[in-house]
Image (cartoon, rainbow, N blue to C red; front, top):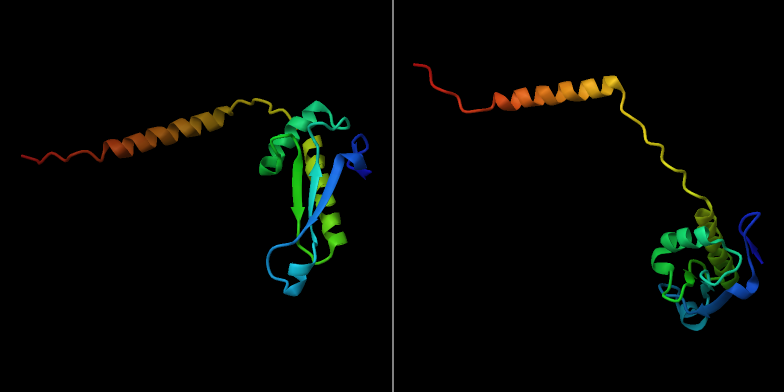
Length: 140
């Protein structure tokens, strides 16, 4: 079980891990050992996630969200399979934790009288400068 918050925990049956060969440098090790981890979490079908969290998670996951409603996280930073597995689980937990936080509603505010006055004075000043840029008439 992967505990995210006090209210949210992901069961082991919701996670599937697949070990694949990592890309990049590493000599013979990278050709022989499957150290990279692909962690798949069936987020859309998870009974442990509330619907608003699923919606925010879908937006936060971006390209990692698949068409069938799963999140795929790939970790291949280290040469250790166990460490990559921990990194992938930590990334998933961080993603779900971020989605669990409801965004605060924006409170509409009005500009202060002073800021409105300063803005209008600045606009008038700029307008006056531009008005003076016109064609100059020759004196007779």
